[in-house]
Amino acid sequence: MKFIDEYQNSELATKLARRIANHSTKPIRLMEFCGGHTHAIMRYGIRQLVPKTVEMRSGPGCPVCVTATSDLDKAIALAHLPGVIITTFGDIMRVPGSYSSLQQAKAEGADIRIVYSSIDAVEIAKANPRKSIIFIGIGFETTAPTIAASIIKAQKNEVANFYVLSLLKLTPPVMKALLDLGEVKLDGIVGPGHVSVIIGSYPYEFIPKNYGVACVISGFEPLDILLCIDKLVEQVESGKPRVEIAYRRGVKPEGNEKALELMGKVFEIDGANWRGIGIVPQSGLKINQKYQHFDADKVFSVDLKPAREPKGCRCGDILRGVAAPPECKLFGRVCTPENPIGPCMVSSEGACAAYYRYGASYE
Ligand code: SF4
Image (cartoon, rainbow, N blue to C red; front, side):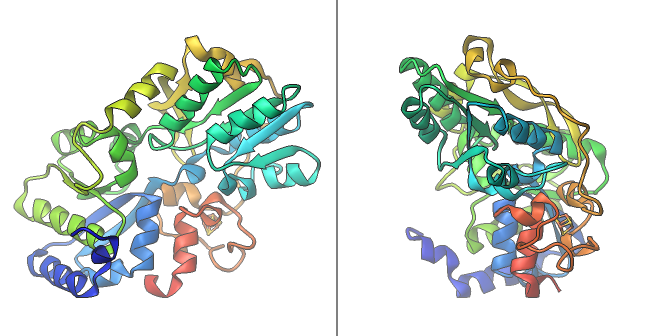
């Protein structure tokens, strides 16, 4: 197939769904790691297309959602410092912190600007030499290379008023953490497509090897996801779990070497705090010593009150795959996209937002 609409062909989708039904004999539980997959699964009604033997659970693959409340509180506190301009992606603005949100801070007078790339933040820094420009670095391996490139660009151009609060997170270590927790028995993982474009398929080898769990990397079109589920079912049925790529047009086993090299120049691996999971060792990217003068965490200091979670919000359980959004008592009643209580209802990749938006298909 050459064109994207071919990956949405309903006739082929029905055939694939039939094929899955034909060789799925035992109940299995799959987790789609990525929030983009959750949205596609809900949008195209894939849960209704696959047989009842295949249960789908959402995982922790929404970068805004997994940002810990304490880290969000830090970003909000930084926004209130004099002479600071916060630059950030739009999704995080409405996420409630413990006591406020970036949106509220902006309403109170903080200078917060939405950017589409961290490179734009470097330009804002150049245009505002008397201010300190802090970019809130939220994302996974997909986002990290661009942020690394921004820091290198700032260094080359001697932009001394650009800083990054790195809240970047790594995918394979949190998959390991979830498998180690063992709260939800998984038979297979729908591997993240965009992240895998960067890191390739090798970093997932531990999943079948150490946990006996199947892992197939998927694209984001309906046929991509159905093909991925087909391969996962085949692996579980045959008792031969392994790592496969069902997104060959995007992912190479070795990943993107240039992007990995960029990340390696600027970042070092450290523990990271994940909402609902806690500190996961080796699952975050911090700015290394060579570039530490760009590290907002090292340059600025803020006093933080103890973090508190939104009352009744089950985002943590949803991100660990323990609960589905409709199991939260606030879902759709108190918590809606207009009045979000937790990040999973705010973010365009959040599971609660997906279930709310494409509601008819979860019944
Ligand atoms: Fe949190 Fe709202 Fe989702 Fe409930 S429905 S888990 S309150 S975001």
